[in-house]
Length: 159
Image: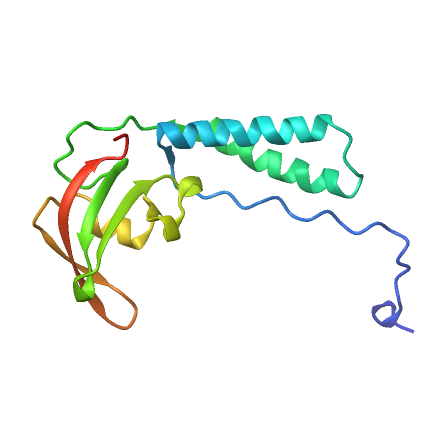
């Protein structure tokens, strides 16, 4: 009988889950993002020092490996005072379709929280508005349509 159709003995432990994927983009972070990464590393190291279950340990190590890599590669970008164009570390107040006003903060990938208005500098929306100044209208291309976005104001995210 061919070995292809025989059942393997399942006495081996399952293979560990793969490492967390890490972005190929530069790891730009705000000063606040750097503190967040440092806090994540410290918290995970502390959790591993305490007694954790054998089942929990591999997942914590994977997560710690991710944050160690992000810490090692982070490039802290200082906030700019009185910015005149949308860039990393700024808050852009925009007017979207239907007159909806929204504050968008351009941050690092690990800092992004779209529901809170924090968008990664690598996101399509951040890329679309980058470099625009107050009063400029940008056409943001979406898969099925485009949306006009007007930059109303820009300020430093440090404020």
